[in-house]
Amino acid sequence: MEAKAIARHIRVTPMKARRVVNLVRGKQANEALAILKFAPQAASEPVFKVVQSAIANARSLADRDGVSFDESDLIISEMFVDEGPTMKRFQPRAQGRAFQIKKRTSHITVVVATPEKEEAR
Image 1 (spheres, rainbow, N blue to C red):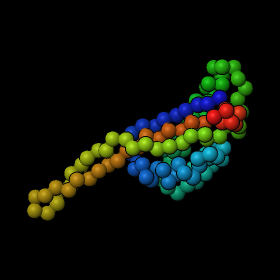
Image 2: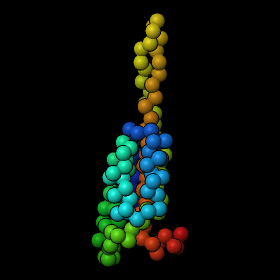
Image 3: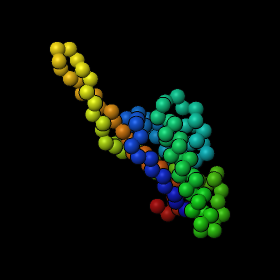
C-alpha cells in the first residue's frame, strides 16, 4: 500500500526544508515523527504535519480497501521538496531606492509505503 501527502505554498525556503527532509528520508514513519518532533529547525513543523497527513491517508486507504493496517509497518519511501512561487516585496532604502526581498515558498511531498510495496519498486 502506498499513500501520498503534499503541502503546497509553505512559507519556508526550499533549502531549509531540504535539510530537514534529508534527516528522515527512508526511515520508518513513527521514527520520522519522533525525529521531526524534536528537531530544532523551524522547517520541521510543516514537514511533521505532512508526514502525519501521509500516515492518515494510508490509514484511510486501508479502511477503504478493507486491508489490515499497522502504522509501524510504514516507511517513508519518497520525500522531496520543490520550490513554490516566490513572493516579491520591496523595502525602502536610502536616497529613494528600493531593495527587493524574495520570500520563497516550498511544496513538500511525502510518500509512505509498506515494505512489500517498496520491494516491488
